[in-house]
Amino acid sequence: MKKATIAITLALILCLTGAVCSRTVMRTLYPHKYAESVEKYSAQYGVDENLIYAVMRTESSFRTDANSEVGAAGLMQIMPETFEWLCMRMNETADFTALYDPDTSIRFGTYLLHLLCEQFGDTRTALAAYHAGLGQVDRWLQDESLSPDGHTLQTIPFPDTAHYVRKVDRAMRIYQNLYAKNSLSINGGINHE
Image 1 (cartoon, helix red, strand yellow):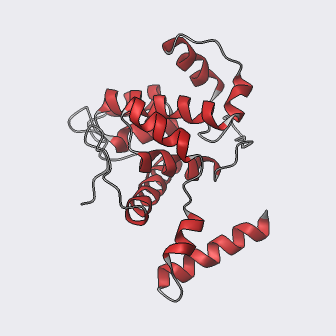
Image 2 (image 1 turned 60 degrees about the vertical axis):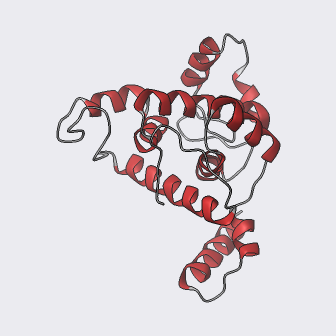
């Protein structure tokens, strides 16, 4: 596992410095794994495929058995409480271990992204909520120094969450460039055009 991480890091450094970079290498680093599920739930919930891939890559590196130190599980790294809440919203009953199934994790994660983007109207703020939690972002939005308009975050005070949002944004832009498809723009999503 450590060797693979070193190899990926070296490949990225080489690509970013322009020494050696090809679309093939980049597509290996930024794959379209679980494409059937991603396409299906992207269309069903109106979430940009590139955003789904970027979240999966950032959260789990496409490992279906991924677990975080804080208890999140699966490709999309969903917390137990969030999973219960999503089950209620979707009127479903499922065991938390169902998140180790790629299709289930992508369906629930995409639905969560849909809800957060719909609620906040801004992908950056939605990603902060995906990482730090809905309640935390609601508190940040009430702080005028972080959100002058009370709707979008200008500043993310948790360094881990700010780093997460930047990482997903970077991955999303790479996916957009590598797989240049007409991307959906969700409610004022991250737009770099």
